[in-house]
Amino acid sequence: MPETAARIALLCEDDRKKDQAEQLAARLAIPVVQDEKDCLYLLAVTPDRLELRQTGAQAPGPVFVDFTMGALRYRRQFGGGRKEALARAVGLKANRCPFVLDATAGLGRDSFILASLGCRVLLVERSAIIAALLADGLERAARDPELCATLARMQVIQADCLTMDHLDPAPEVIYLDPMYPHRSKSALVKKEMRLVRALVGDDNDAGLLLDWALRQKAARVVVKRPQGAPTLGKAKPAAVITGKNSRFDIYLPR
Image 1: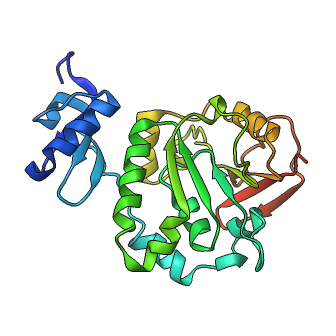
Image 2 (image 1 turned 30 degrees about the vertical axis):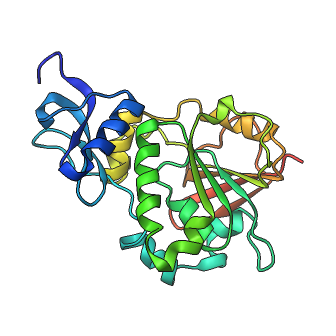
Image 3 (image 1 turned 120 degrees about the horizontal axis):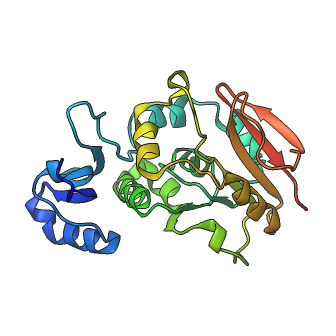
C-alpha cells in the first residue's frame, strides 16, 4: 500500500447512488476512491447497503447493520423478551418501558432489542463512520412493515456523550457498553467487533463515561461488562444481573 493511501475512504459501487455517496463522503470528510487498494479501510456504498470493509487478502468479511435478519431476528422472535438479562437490567416491566439513552450505541443491537420490547431509545455514537452504518441500518429496517413500530422508537445521533450535559428530556436509564480492551487472542470477539475495534480503538475513557452518566438525572445507569471483567471506576454497583456471556452492573445515582 502506498504511503499516500488513505486510512479510510469511500467507494461507490452503485452509479444510481453516486450523488448520495459523494454527499456522505463530504459529510464524513473522507476521500472517494475508485480502487480499494488506495485505502486501509473502505466504506462501500453498494446497491443494497452501506458496508465497512478492511482491505487486503486476509481481511475479514464486511461489517454492516441489519436489524431484519440473522441473530437479531431470532432473538426478537424467540428470545427471552422482558425476562432476559438486558431487559431486567434497564428495569423494563409489564407496565414500564423506560426512555433509554444508549451512550455507546455501536452497531445498535441491544438498543434494537430494547426498542422491540417497547422502550424509546436514543442511540448516541461518537464514531461518525459507525454512526453512518447505524443510520443506514435503521433506514433500511424502517421499510419492513413488521419493524415500523420498533424503528419509530429509535433515534440515532452522532456525538460524544462526554460533551453532552443538561439532557432534555432526561433519560430514565443510561446504558453503557464500552469496548473492552481484550489483550489476548483467545479473548477476541467476533469479526464485526474486531474490525470496529481496529478502526475506532477501545473505549479507554470508559471510566469517564461512567462518571458522566452518574452526574446526569437518570434514575439508573447500566454498564454491560464481559464476565470476569472489573467494574468501571470506583463506584460500586447497587446490583448485578448476570447473563449468558455478559453481566450488567446497575448503578442508582438518585
